Length: 609
Image 1 (tube, rainbow, N blue to C red):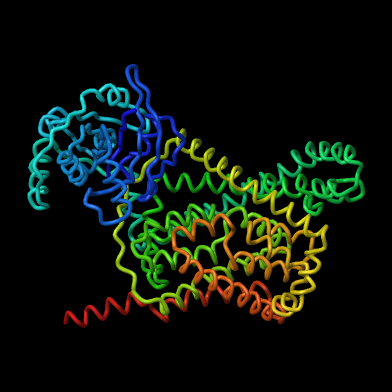
Image 2: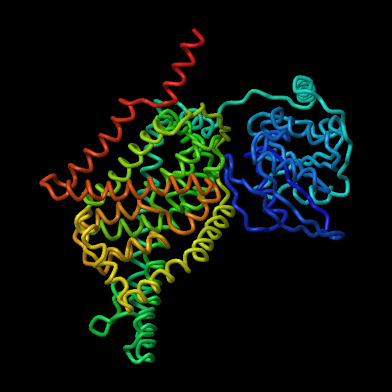
């Protein structure tokens, strides 16, 4: 089976073309770095079947990073290369095209987003471009599928016309001459989207816009998520699922080891889905009734922000602040992704330039960014005691994120370079792509989370039955009670946290904790160690040594934060005042202390002078 490789710059719609050609379920995102590893699919025409590979987005075939190395390798092994080119940025995209023309591989150019080019007043002579390049050029609109049939039909016309290699200056001269012959730009007025693009990059308007976007996003997640949670609890679990569980309980005789494992303890002949602690009661309820409603809404909002092109603009707006923590603005993308799931957030961090940046980003994300599954449980458990206690949890995590970033930035050698990031235009997201992405992410959560959630409940039940939890509780009770002010039974939640953090938070439900204890428990569980899935990815991304260092930082930070909160919440300081104080300190400290990057830049200026 012959191989077709899709090659192109980031943000040219390459993954959309791949999805349309193969029907494969792949992520389609509108910010740089979505396609980190290549994806496989298949395409069958009337005469032949092909294996289609979606190569990582790259600007050049001369590798300067792992991503570009993968792209270059795939191109060399291809039978046909489809070079996806952004028609709105023809000159920049043709740099890669000219490099592909110098490789011994049949080539077709898919001139994508030709509709957007027209809207911007860019007119391209397709026939002239095809003549000058010497390979087929097919105009496409990948989102709607326009031109993709013609692209497939042109596969037999793929041509291998190896050109002599050019140096960089000659290459740009050739491209400039070519673009001058095939492209014309006519005057046009800014559209409302382009006006919004400009406004979102100016500090005076961009920062307030960022605050509004993030506020509305989280309001939607919390508000709609809570509505869906109550609907699931009232109509699905208490109205339908409870009846099935009671039938099963009766069939199991209402007692016994298997009954306690699967169903847990009934309360007055009824199922308490929060406290029964059975695999089929609390386990299923936590995943589908508590976590999934919030997670689905978050993924819906995240998908819109990705495909609209807003996330890179958010990166520009926070670049200055992130530099003070040893990172640059692009690091905000792993942080935002972390609120959905820490695993894709850790994978997104690989696009950061240096090992130092990746270490800081992954550590801060693991310590202070709870995933949506965990976040949903924290909101549900702590929020019922009042918004002031919930504010303390979030203010504490924000404070930890800032202070830990300042400390690591000063302790770890090196500095953070300036950010270079491509900013795509605003686009109205495709409804079809949004639904597809949402379904994929929910499916991925159910597939990957279910074993951990149900397995965690199962392990806890068995440990309780065998008396091991009681033994560990007695053993570590002095430390847990003395440092954190939590009961000895809370040891079980810390143990389960190594498997799944959201399950660990759910384990606090049967303990009957006070509001103060719930705040401490939520902060410690959020900060002290990543779940098993995230831990596995971090070992792969950071290496064993750096992951061990990061783990030590997490444990020390978590228990230090828990100890300090135990002291502060035991005083007469109201929770609301404590939350405000932590936020104010978090904002003041970076401005007062500066960053190693700032000091390095000043040093460079002094040396130049």
